[in-house]
Image (cartoon, rainbow, N blue to C red; front, top):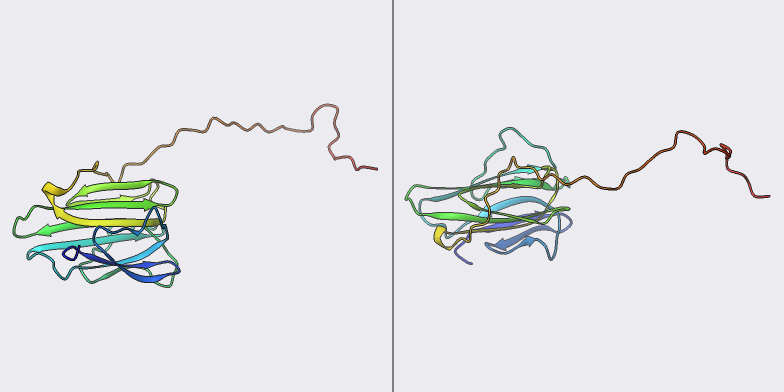
Length: 181
């Protein structure tokens, strides 16, 4: 919508593209590596602030820098995809707004979260971000997805395939293959 934030995304091999709030940046239908974000919000409600931070290429920092509106977060020209995002709302007038975030990470499905402070990464924190959708809406209108805990890791079951290695040639065979004569 024209009232929500716009996101300028730097996309690998495509450059900078501007997206409206609620629209997929790349995403399930057109995945591509997202390398940076800049959030613009010309019609931002008075007193409502949006902050964001990113991790790039699996390089987690103890305290990633938090950016404000109209600041670029990420890389350009270094081919380093984002591997995690965090968005945080702050307001002085008590307006009850929430974030609705969906993110697609390489090799995994779409992860969703809602709230006023939302962090999303892939299961290991190193998977490239291939799609992102962000919306800011009144809390009463936000369908609540499960809140994601950034420390939560998905544990995949072990494979049932087992490999066995021999310790030497089988009895009755030579250690070198025979040449056809």
